[in-house]
View (cartoon, one colour):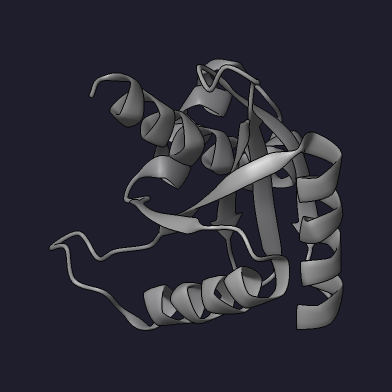
Length: 138
């Protein structure tokens, strides 16, 4: 049983996966978005490869907790994923995950170019790890 974590953006999708015990999140890739069909095909391939049974997607809320236009795009795409892949999708508040990812990479002294390439994957790790921590505390 593995859980897939997604940080869905307009141009990229950061992807992370849990270990088989559901304790830690590891980043696996950043998908460059091409089309809905191509994106779904790549996500399905990852789900099959890692034997995923649940997907957690970051939900980009405004700082006051309201949903904006980006949230609606993400929720719409998650419905397409759910219909196409057939796995349950949980939404996870992703406020500040990208900020935390940038901060961690700055502390690791990564160049701007390297940070740009992996920030979405790092954000997906933060989203998934937050979810895993929340279910292990229950």
